[in-house]
Image (cartoon, rainbow, N blue to C red):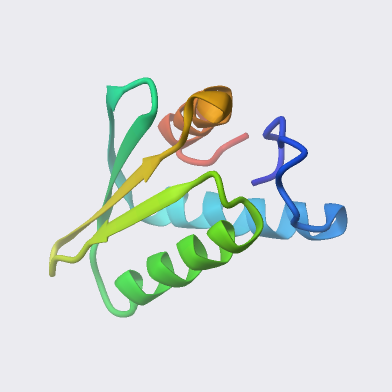
Length: 109
């Protein structure tokens, strides 16, 4: 997720970070319908469903965990709405704060 202050524990190569960020931004711009926080370590995104959206969300979340293992993603499928719950540990709360700001902006950063 480009423009995030990525922690050293992120293993995504620097040159790949803008591309990954663009994938998230595209998803947010196209599908994001709501953002909510149930606490400082949890973020909930509601995404408009559609053809292959759940697969796209799962794929992106899986690849993100592959390089940033501090994230936990839970996808809740639905025909009209897909839930994406994101959790982090205390050490990475600031990363989640920036992600919440980014999603609230619809990926326009």
